[in-house]
Image (cartoon, rainbow over all chains, first blue to last red):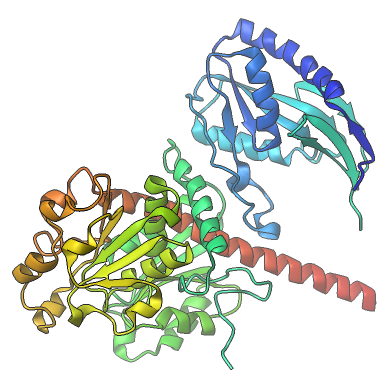
Length: 171
Length: 337
């Protein structure tokens, strides 16, 4: 299927640069702030930023399958690798990273999971793309790119070449 | 004509977990991968996830078993389910209430999942066939037939230490004939493509058809242990000794006990496993059961994650099926209107 729109890796890297700047400022002020990516797209974005920002802590990874709110309609989502948070969350500034912020449900689930690791001092939400379609009062603090999409359209990160494409669901 | 396997719902998804037979390598691997996620949860400060919030899991035990019941109870609680422990060893069933009557009573209590432990082979299967739709059944051990969650936690423990099953030589020692654990382990190992599965024990404790399960019989334990990556002991039930199927505990140990000398014949990094409770000095020497190669206590720990995986997979499949049927109904109503 050919995507409606495709953003090549050069364009996407300008979005990543746009995220890097404010996050670097956070880490200068709070050197023990830590990055956590949401599997899978958020971990890809997280890896990219982690390499460039070089914070003291390794990148955390969350698999939110056990915290999703659609268990009663979809069942258990595949567990693509367990969550790994190799640092204490208590009193730490957590930079939560995802590829796309849409409804906000994934971030809600991720925040619930983070609080089962401890009580963070603060959570900053950083996303590569913030799209339209919010269903919860959740907005990103750091945004690479903003896009308006219809409810039939979806946007995804292709981790192999760090490009982004917009597709349409067929009825 | 054989009836369809009640373990699967109309969409071909697992809805009950009664027996490892009937599941293929992909389905077993899915359980193991999911359990890997839950193993991480059990290492956190807060060891529970909200998956089964509002659901009720009933542990229905017609046969005593503190360990299995405790492990299921903890697994259900860590999924945020409410847990009901129903001890039927000394209850109405002894007063003449039939299994089906008991089942109807428990259904009326509006439980969502039954964990069934029963002394009769086939009991969990029977319950799965007769239970009200929407209730999931997990076999917590039935007679000499099957103990599938024990089988899966054994596979999980082996995979964590040894990785690829195809490269492994696994030796199972003892009372194979009466052991539901051995049956489930063999079924899982064969389905997962284990390199070689050897069984060792007195011929009185060996099932007649054991080779048809895909294993090789070794009459001599010393030969069987050469090259072993994993050694699995089984509990020798005292009643077998009384019924004189074996001569005496001391003699059993002399011929089939896992002593330090015998352990030395296996690969130096061979794992020692046992479903517990162990009869020290009968199936296994105390210093082997407690030794550095033993993963007996680890098996208990991983049993929680594996049971969390099984419960959440089957309940999730039933929830998804319910939602699909409801939306199909709604679609049918709107087209006929």
